[in-house]
Every structure is written in structure tokens, then in C-alpha cells.
Length: 61
Image (cartoon, rainbow, N blue to C red):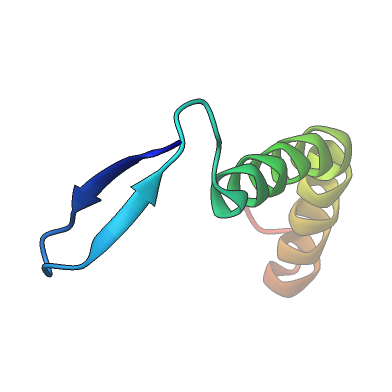
């Protein structure tokens, strides 16, 4: 049976030790995907950005 705790708002909630809330897992998985995509696409996006800046400035700089 889970422990009962009172929150700051006065609600009584049941706690289950060792259980990770779903929003924590979703947040961690999303962060992992962002890091993975950034690592794979970062150099290509950087090259595109540099090329675009070069075209806009007319090769100055």
C-alpha cells in the first residue's frame, strides 16, 4: 500500500515509491531525441546557415 501525503494545496495523494511519473519519462525521451537530432543534423544545418549568410552579404566578410 502506498504512503499518503498531503500536498501544498491540501490534497491527499497516494505515493508509490520507485514509480517514475509518465511526464518525467516523456521529458527525458524528448531531450534525448533533441540531442540525437542535433548531433546528426548540426553540421549540415551549420553549413546551410553559413552558405545563406554568404549569399545575403554577397561574399563580404
